Amino acid sequence: MKYGVALGAALMLLAGCANDLTYLDAKVDPFIATNYKATDALVDSVKTGGHGLPADATIMVATLVSIDALDESSRLGRTISEQVQAKLTQRGYKVIELKLRGQIFMKKDQGELLLSREVHDLQASHHAEAVVVGTYSVAKQFIYVNLKMVDANSLAVGAHDYTLPLDRNVRSLLKGS
Image (cartoon, rainbow, N blue to C red):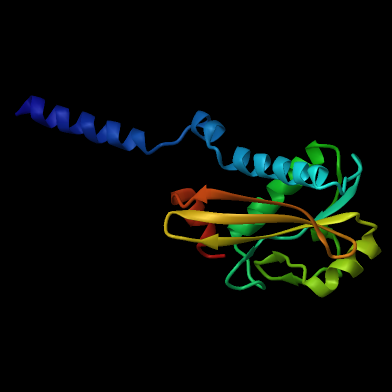
């Protein structure tokens, strides 16, 4: 009986430890790497499309929005947008920080939402050569993400689609927008 209680306690302790994440777990989580690869693919699609983008181009990145409600986003959309901005900056592009601009359509807890009629005006006023816009669609097991690079004439000059697993972490970014 004594050994049974000790064994039960040890198993409960081990089960509790299994739920504790470590920095190593966070380091190998593929979420950021997936969004960085998608950003690289987006930039590469602009180059292969013949449009080109100067190596030091000025770019704006709007918050990704839900395909079901183009005026709504979530922590997921805002997080992906932040990671796209980070990767573009790492690649040497000048990225305008929209959160510091007063004239962008900001919706509380939604982020920087760019309406199509505003893209041209915003690009001109901020001297941006391109804007990254995107959508996400929630399905049963995956999130389908679309990124587009739009030029000053509101033409999509690059695009990339990818998927994210609808795991517990991604699901939590969709809750409580």
